Amino acid sequence: MAGFSKVVATILLMLILVFSTGMIAEARTCESQSHRFKGLCFSKSNCGSVCHTEGFSGGHCRGFRRRCFCTRHC
Image: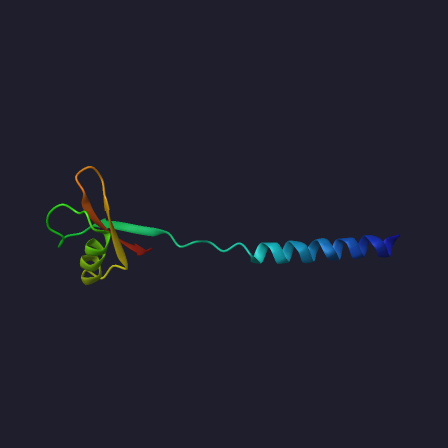
């Protein structure tokens, strides 16, 4: 019976290790309003292009006033 409990404990430990390594923390996304984008923002690709020139990884239009916000990984 003692051997059986060791086998069960080993299997549980292996399952914990397998499932715990599967959890990967996602990077947070920081955003900042574009300084170079002028006018109302209606095109995500236009906003993204301007944000790339500012050193960000992308951008999107947001809000009632349709401003361009640049995004990057923190």
